[in-house]
Image (cartoon, rainbow, N blue to C red; front, side, top):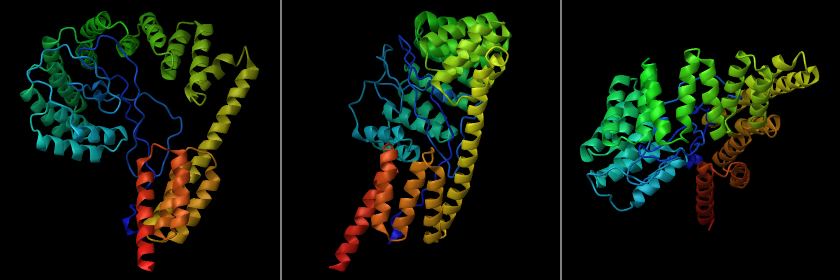
Length: 422
């Protein structure tokens, strides 16, 4: 009876943040953050471990013709189009809804169906190309964006998207050519100039990159990501004064970015502006109370002048480390419970999930544990208990669509069982 329930392992977080999403003709910068999507099947969590990492080129995605996907901002188009905008397509809306939930594989199927029905719909192709990139299907993504350009050669957006896909495949030279093509089509496109600037910076052509970032900010003074990457460029070259100035402009536009405040604190500390550095690190910690880098920086800075505060921060770090050890133990127990469920040893799986939930308390894994416990109960044919746990999981994480699907299947199983009993 439980065969229709799919085994759902708690996903490990592979965070792909779309930090800067602008269409090339954007007139003003807007801050949108996508909820990090989860992939994978390992039952693990990375708790507040931070480090410098490469942001994918797909942080620049834009879609033509008024279509929005995930957290993409679409601005009024000012570039002349070769193709007229087709009417709204419910199939595309369905694919977008799936993508918004992080279900990229299913979204890909829907967008592929839309492309089959309307092979020359640039919107459907653009959406398909973006999802393919998110799934790591870079050759297919590049091919899809080339088709968009063939359909709509006057679309600066299409060249930007192809450039992003090429950048994700480390073809920076090819990506740069596409950014230049977009700029020729839309000289006032902040997004195209931004892509060009990032590529030039990565290629080591830093003076040219500066010129592009200046153009971005002339076109769109509120384009915060240009300030962030320009600041990083100056930092790499040791130009601390310029980096400080750019980071200060950035945090005025993005005051909620804890990482930027920490970076600004480091720059200020290097310049021996310790009071300002301490204020920046405190701001970061107010935004993210578990930001280890901010805490360690404050401990060092306050050790001599404010030892009591420094000691409190040390105690907080110890508590976070204890919490992490608890999460690690919950991970191990959750993994074992999942393996037992996969082996159809439902009693052992249910016992281990219960133990993991008790150990977890209100930790970040609670909703996933409740969901998987519900699935284990359903597999074991205990539908009442399964529904109870699934409803708890839904309350804890209303955005998890798989919980609603499991509840629907449980209800269907119940109706079938009642039908057989009659």
